[in-house]
Amino acid sequence: MKAKVLYSKAGLATQILIEVEENYFLVDTGDGTLRDLLSLEIDFRNIKGIFLTHGHFDHIGGLYALLGYFRVIERKNEIKIYFPQKSQETKSIVFSFIKSYNDIPFPLYQYELKGGEKIELDNIKINTYRMKHYAAVGTNRILYPEPAIGYRFFWKGKSIAISGDTALCPGLINLVQGADLALIEATLTKDEATEELLNKLHLSLEKAQEIGKLAKEFILIHQK
Ligand SMILES: [Zn+2]
Image (cartoon, rainbow, N blue to C red; front, side, top):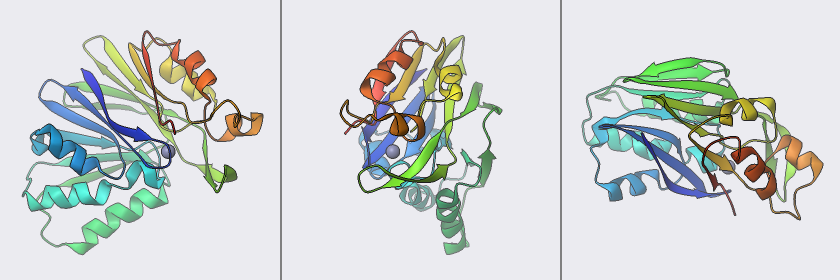
């Protein structure tokens, strides 16, 4: 099992590819996901699941293009999309795609997650964890809580944890603790990291490193 960060930049796009033998699983589909995948020259039929951490545009902006591409290449095998319950942006994109065509050649299954689910898909297991992440605009002006999920992939005794965007929360500790590899967001600079932002929005570089040490190895993503 390997994790490849296709791209990750805060407020722009994040997309991560998990590879397990011949199967692929995407975690987040920010803008440019299709371009990034095409550059890898992989078989798109082997992308079996799309796991979205939350509905902010920098994490789902490339979803429509990817689904559109699946249709154009006449993919026949099913695709499963997992996302946090009540993620309105995600549901709207998938709904819009489904309603735009009456000739979608592949079954599309949607699963809404609360956190705490145990998923099995193509010989891998995925546990979900509820994260804590608020919507914000401008310079970190906090709005309202956003449903957000972290994912931990298990395969042959190894595990990879992916936080998505998250503030400090108990779910994050459980997600990362003991993982072989953790991909952790580290959005805030030292100067930005007020207590309120750390408690509602994002991790700082320092906090992300602290959390990362709960795993055997870690990579920091979603930086500016
Ligand atoms: Zn983000």
